[in-house]
Length: 396
View 1: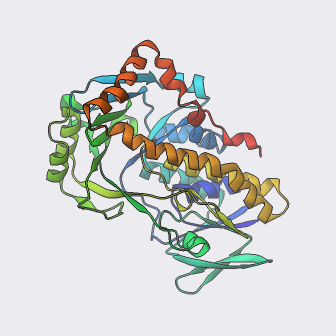
View 2: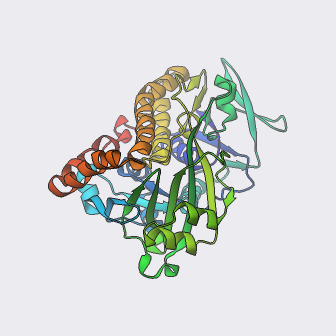
View 3: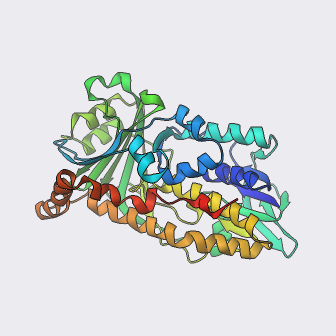
């Protein structure tokens, strides 16, 4: 089949590689002039790594990323450890694949290189998709200049402001969560003794939390800080904020947090909006993928992983079914419940991380602390349904 993919981000490039893996032709339409990515880190949990292992990319990603030793929860001001559990070899033993941290730009570079090797002419840059037309014989992506790119299937991997989704389902109605996220990437040689531990750590506080982890073999530290505030509601991934304001938001917090903010060259911020799960992701020969159909709040670190899972299931479904529409319907039925459950879990974690009252903190963090000491495996086991999932078992 000839597969058209709108969007050259993580989801779109992974979808292209998965479609090639399953024997299809691909054209990726990306509106930007290049496939660069704004500087930030992300976590690739074992469920997503299984896809990259199937694509033969795991070793290259490991070389570009950082393999954390564990996952921890701490109090944001005192730094008191609430719980921890091992990753590294323990993740492979328990969930079948490693857990990885990687810079978004490095992930994009690996995916771009792999796609260039397999299909040198697959990516078309400066191609802004505004909509689509379809009939019983095919589908065409309609570009801003009026050009139509024709194929058998169109995949909308075009993000939270997806024109494909808007044509399919109408304008979305996102709800502001009352949370604003700060993010920065800092060279560790600027941090002295305050370098974050080599783990994925969630730091919890009153109406706010932070996440820290390392990238690029430990050369960079990634910071995300989320605060409850209502005076800024711009849903932008690339807008710079004031370092002084970020420091004010995390005043009095543990030195690991404040030192990272102080040492950053720039602080980006974006308002976090929530969206209800969609009831359908497909229309005829058109299907949505990743943030276009299930945008995630960043509180389970599963946004990229869900798009990566989508990509493999969609490509496999197109190969397993003789007809396109049943194939896309099968993709949706396979993915909808899981993606919606992760969306709900991400939403719930905001409350877990931001307990404001003494009673709320005691009732939430007390059991975490106790479980971390007498039953650490219980905390680890709660991740089984996420990290142990293997979409590649649908077969080639």
